[in-house]
Image 1 (cartoon, rainbow, N blue to C red):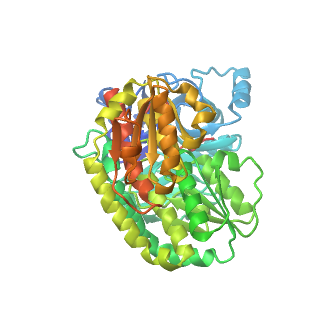
Image 2: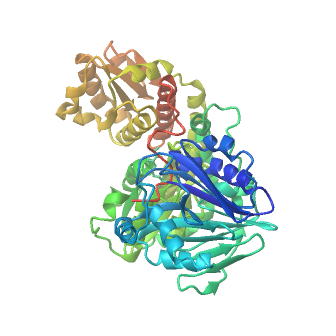
Image 3: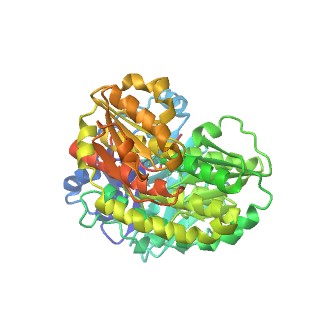
Length: 590
Ligand code: F6R
């Protein structure tokens, strides 16, 4: 979603805001903008496109108070006009979230003679603050927030005032404390290296920042103290190094994501066992790639614990009136821990008495704050919009949960098994040549991923990754379903990628491969099953071999291959895999 950041202090706010926005660009890159105050004036700079477009425009701007925004468009197409900040009178505003009742608010303002410039929901905020402003910016923001429905993190400045007023509801907002300067941002990465301590605001909080003070108020507008925490983003390396894209860098970090998740899990093991004592059913939920990890996790719980396990995408779960009892554990899986549907699904599960387990890569997220137990995914910051190392980290975390709860040999061997597969993943990433297949996919009219059981779960992820970064259409399907419909799509311009890592099911997939080549389709096989190559039809020219591994963990090796394939296909087609069109990381709106 959108990223927002603010600065007030002795440095040049233009530089601070620009740096912050660059670090938040993974949250949206449809447009970027900033507003500054100084000398009683408001300066606003905004452009459609990526943050770097602001750089020449910032030019000589020298100010000590500023707010900035990088946009993922929801209401109103990407354009200069719809870019934030939005201005009304002397007020400038940046907003992350969605104002659900904006149409009604806008109609009221229009009736009273207010002229709107943009098609956004956010512009109403600027006009309302302007309407209520009579010398106290925070009070005007408070009045405005009382009228808003939906989700928001808002920063506002006013010409002639040396302060930033902020508030949030269902959208993250963090304050960073410096020496003679203060920051605010939607996410920690914006504050990396900027300050030692931060406060994560809670839903309904307000705050007023000057260069030397930060006053926080709760929803009743009573002054409160919120705890400070160390700014962990300080030590994190967010640079791309020598890699051409974050996506490639992050795929190369897949082995580390598995190993580090293993190390981090040790601290939560006992708590998890304790919390699970009375559980007799699990529901795994998440969105997109995290949901695909849930599908893998379901099989771990069923196979290792013989426990009924269900999956549901978070967006469905929260609206289907789910049947949940006190003996149900809901595992909410999310890289960011901020995905609106996943957070709300977890909240609902909690309200209905379930044990809520957050499986997340973000240790200060909303999801963490409402979970009973947090199972860490230690993939490290993921900047590329497409999830890669966080997916394998999630699988490792779910494997560890199920193996721990199952006890016995599985429990005893779990860390060894993960280290082994991580070492193999290293080799897979180094040795897999996917360039020929990437060329085929780039020219195809559709690329379909097929597999059975765990390989089917990965087929869904392989397909999502490919379409997300390369825009090549396709689908993931259970191999057995091919003949029940999708076979109609197979001809000489389509590619079918089979994932075959389960020896027992290999023979069943061979039939599906046969069906594809018979219809003139191009078949690709990713496998670690011995002897399969000799049994495949002669027309299968492309076999990507991965090493033999634990039946339940081979999915991690094949995941690295499908991620590389998606990456290479995107680069063949000259797409930017780090910033796929129309997408953003961390979907904090419904
Ligand atoms: C796909 C992708 C998305 C996310 C989804 C959930 O590559 O990145 O499908 O997996 O938006 O995000 P998190 O895990 O942050 O909840």
